[in-house]
Length: 326
Image 1 (tube, helix red, strand yellow):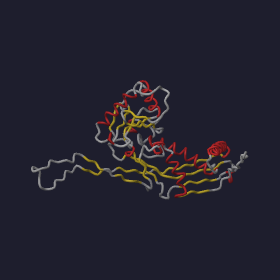
Image 2 (cartoon, helix red, strand yellow; image 1 turned 90 degrees about the vertical axis):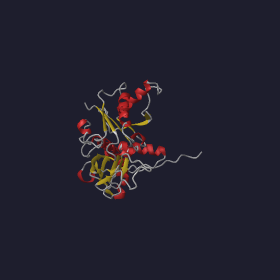
Image 3 (tube, one colour; image 1 turned 120 degrees about the vertical axis):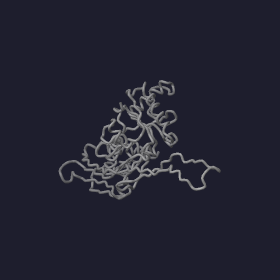
């Protein structure tokens, strides 16, 4: 029998001053950006390499057909039915400044080491673990402010003030979407009726329903109500279904953690219409580790990240927002 060889792993938590700029910062800054669920799951379009702002020029078409044949004019007649619109994605400079106690995060680091050893993965260095853990939390925060427009972000998808209400929606990136008044609270009994109302409005907007990935963007609470409702109708086995991705009326239902469970709102659009710009690959992004414990007698390591993110919709009217506007 071949004896099992033990492995020695380095659990050193010494941190040296490190600055990761430009391409060296990409693994950590990208992790922070991709930590946002809407971005990570491909529910939007991401444009990288943006410096300050990006201009999107969608073409708007109306009826382009004209009468032809012998009765038509011989000259070229411009129908003037194609216009060039302009939507701007302006970046907001964001930063992460966190002081992390080595003693506090050490048990989590050790657990990650053990899990990765069992899985056959190479355990991470403590410095990489610190940056990765911080980037993960930054991504969760980014997901929230992308939807609510909370400080320090600019205009969010459903608000510009951090609060999703009528005033916030009317000043949000989705302000020009068709609006449907949903006057009753979301429950398992009402959610399908609300989704039907939003869908009916979307069906009245030419072209939306044919866009790839077009679907309902809802909170996790609304998503759970939806699961209960379809289960009650017998289209699912029971109420105890996991929150897997499902469809309604043939269109995806996207649960987004950035939409608060406390707000009854539904957005209907398609991923390519939600445009998120970042300054990744511009050389202006950075991440830094500062071993403060070496200088001030604490047990802290300071983590900083600097990057920029902004968003807008590509086609201002391609969508529907359902909310209690009364």
